[in-house]
Image (cartoon, rainbow, N blue to C red):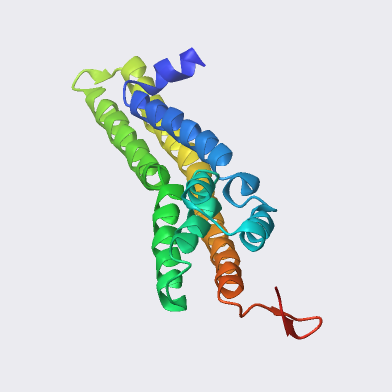
Length: 210
């Protein structure tokens, strides 16, 4: 491996740094964007149970807000439970935008790496081509310099593409996952609004719940 890095020349270090950052971001986002961590499966049910049994207070709402991103969205709605349906939904939407922004943290960096890696590879290719042309001398070609120039050009191109492809795939994956989780949080928050305002219907019996 070290021999390959040595053959690729100094431009490869930029690509290696980009690859390390990309791997770190992919691991961090994979851990942070787990479904159960963002949208706990039983949280809405628990919130509704507590709300119907004893109502809510500031302590309960603050604890809910710290539970998870979904908890933060539901807590924003409960802070405005005595307001109109419109105000409650507006508060939920504002919290949802803040949560979505937080979930997209580092994705811009990952997308930038996916875009920049081929360009860094191209930069290494240009450096290699310069060395190839530099090997041409009036007295003949310097085989060692020519071989090194070819190595620099090819290795950097290959590394740039190899880094860009998985980074782009994971960037798209995380963007789609964030969008899906945001939609799911909005749906659950809408159910809470309906329940608080007494408009959630039991579709089996056709009667309002609670």
